[in-house]
Length: 242
Image (cartoon, rainbow, N blue to C red; front, side):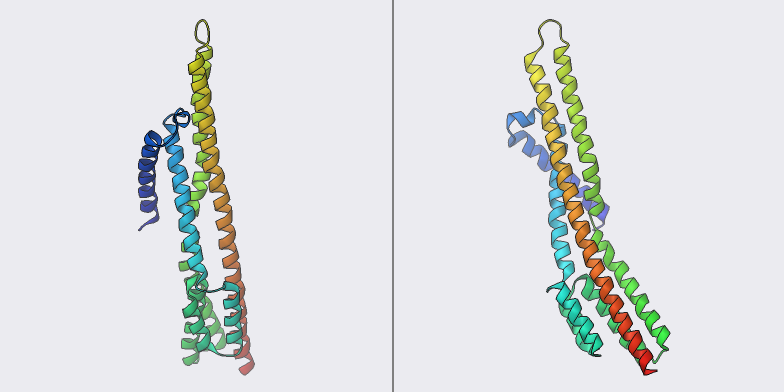
């Protein structure tokens, strides 16, 4: 499913669920925040959904075992020229790192059998690594833009609701004679509820975005280190042979 289609469907479903929650499950003082509360609820539901999706996806991207130990074992196996064993480790591990390293090692065995010059062997391995990484990276960064967007607009939507509430409050103060206490309290309540809703969605999205970006950066950094070591080992040993 395309990313834009997934986000659109999620927005529609989140809005529908938020509408039901707003009319049937929320206390009266939150309903006083007005219909903008529905949109803030929808954004909060979307953020929570993205958090669950990213958590599961990044856990899957790490593979079936401790990532750091796996990378160390693969590098050691390549150092000992146990390429078939290293490929089998990658196959069992799976995930982003396992897929990229397996593609590189399998390609190296192919070009090695063709007895290509050393520089062409290394170039071919690097090309395969770049292609495999380009395929895996979008999966790691999926939905991060959506989370970042929600973090930006949730505060603005909450501020919009706050502004509407303050307008209602000042209208109550500006009424002829004694101020309308009911309308004044409703306006203040609307302002505060929307402020709280906007801050909740925005803060949750900001924290989630930073956590997931850090996880992606850590994973890609560990992969880059392992790839660099493996390419150096393969290139260095072939150079020593020649």
